[in-house]
Length: 376
Figure 1 (cartoon, rainbow, N blue to C red):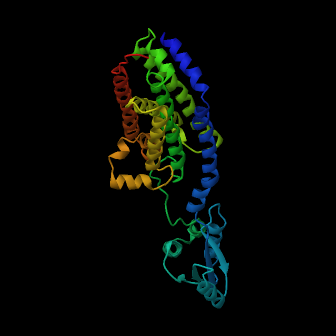
Figure 2: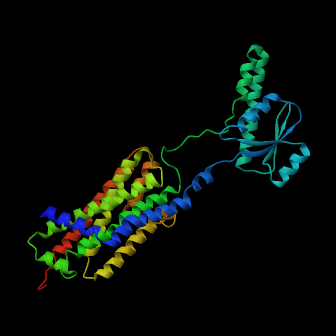
Figure 3: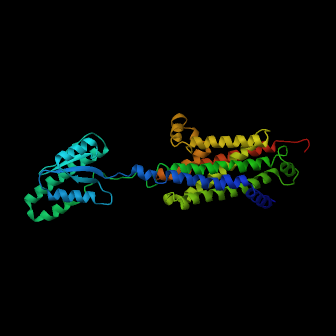
């Protein structure tokens, strides 16, 4: 009996056009739009261009010239040098065409027009070169045989900063929209759970009236129907994650299997939430559908689907809410894989989703089982 109801529910779910659109086609469309909008925006924002710099030669310094060539001809150039007269350099500095002027001679000096990140990098570059030059000059005086070695060392690329990533995951800020897209699909699974609940209530649907007359125990019928929708919802979640990862090529690193697990758990939570909403009161189907959709979209909004910094606002104003918001739980479980080296947060979010799913299922089942009908 259980397997018969399970297979029936899977077949009937796949015939619902709204399910096919909202859980399969809509995520693909919205994900594609996200990719078009945010595709290379992060790279453009974080990529540092070569710093336009004027160089005024007051005395020939071949070593410094070779260093400038080294830092400007690399794959990630530090400087974009222009060798100019002092008058032309000052004019360009005043117009903002260059960020600083390096006077190259026996000693280096730097002139900048203001303060900023690029000016600070130029100051570090000049300071590091000056320190290296002094050390190497002193070494040459004490041991001339090492002259070529020290000149080669001076000619190496000067690093003004060292990159130490806080995480090995994808640090792209805009990936949160794709994470929230997965959460949206999971929460929209509430519509399938709502359908299960409505189909079990004799006063709300003809199918519910027939099931009430069935010999199958209510708990078995409900669990089999929910299991069928969980399977369908899980397939939808797998399709969504696969499309984002392999077609849109959003990088989830080495944690892709865990992303699938979080998405499936979120889908089960969404179905259970819809089942709970459908079990409340005696509202008509249209009213419950409207309530379910409204609550789902509000949860997605508060998790950051429409507004990127909304999650931070919720953390500041109501930090407890993200711990019970199904959409936030799904998105946070996925984002934790990028933010943390351990899986503690991920496991906590995953367990929370499963516990809330059980609570929704038990409460919904209790409300349905309590109802009696004088006639059908």
